[in-house]
Length: 260
Image (cartoon, rainbow, N blue to C red):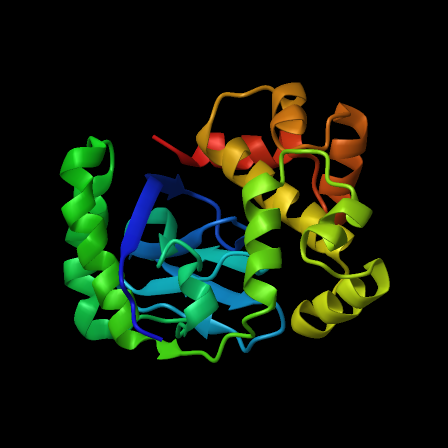
């Protein structure tokens, strides 16, 4: 597949400071994540992949929609771990997410570490117009190390619909009808492409966006529940804890303590 255009809609970047050895957390993101250990190191795996360890200024790459298992290890000299990251909300050919068309290595090749350090550092607190050239260069690096996938074409429109409309109330009968399928056929095809049901897939999209909002916004828990299409605060908190083993409040505190 030829790449005709890459559109970065928005991004989140930041820096974190950690002072506890072996600090562990799990999360999912709705966007492609690139994280770098400036001092100290990451111990990292996604879903059931093998665990990898970053070296000085090592960078890990996490596609959207995967469970990230992250452990922070302190630098022995400074007794702290400093990290920086960027989340990329982007589309390719106005249709695909970058991880739809590329498989990325868990660790970026070391030869890019220094350049990525400057790209992410410069994007932190930058205005979008200043950050865009930096982010497009970062994407160029990611695509150069990625391996192209074969995409099941019938799945892309269904996935795109859920990704774009997750905040709305979605009726599965109407969802199937919009793709000229019966509900059983839609469920069968969706399951074969994703390994899960449309309802579970939609719930996971909503929770991933909740993670991003908890990390990067000041919205209240009630507002996040509403913004993600879940609505009820208590049901939202129940789903969130079942998925990530912590409450939304605890999750937010973890990142608010780390940021400076």
